[in-house]
Amino acid sequence: MPVEKHINFFELEKAAALPGCPLCRIIADRAQRYLNIMLFEHVGDRGFRALHRKAGGFCASHSRSLESYRDGLAVAILGRDILVDRLECFKKRKPWKPQGRCPLCEEQDDIEHEYLGFLVQVPDTCPDKDDAELKGIFLASDGLCAPHYERLQRGFKRVPSWLLEFQNRKYEELLRRTDVFIELSAYGRQDEFRKLDEKDQLVWKELAVNLRGGG
Ligand SMILES: [Zn+2]
Ligand SMILES: [Zn+2]
Image (cartoon, rainbow, N blue to C red):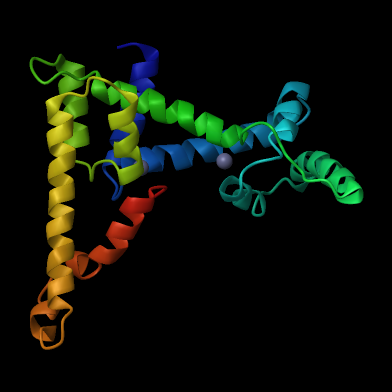
């Protein structure tokens, strides 16, 4: 098994055993690791500093994790670059227009593409031993969230039927459970509602997370 495949395989196995979209979970873990490396090791790296500055810093969602970061110096050094640029624009009363994209979003895109590519290469028939195992792991997971499934459909011309069928079945089931939830939420159906599993009583949360993605 090639090294890269080996790494992905175990990461996916761990993520697939937990609730929610496994890819969202992998991305959240990797983004955290990437941020640690960037802030700890590369804050003095001119290339990264320039990239970060050009992008106008991290996006709002990725910036949030900076606030709880333990190394204030790294956050201050990176933030200072942005503050200098913003201050200049404020003084001139001209709009601040960063050119690049959040370095973490870029990294996230690469991870997504890598993993989705990894899944779509598992054929419908006669997969080799590793592929069969990977397929088994993924089929036991909650499947991809809506943004990741969309990305899979748009990003790859050929998607194996096993994957499409699995995902579509997951969505049909989610729709059915949502319909039951809505129906039993009506006045006079409280007794039936109370008999639902806890998971089904909270399906609206699952639906909201699935539709927005991001775990
Ligand atoms: Zn996802
Ligand atoms: Zn971002």
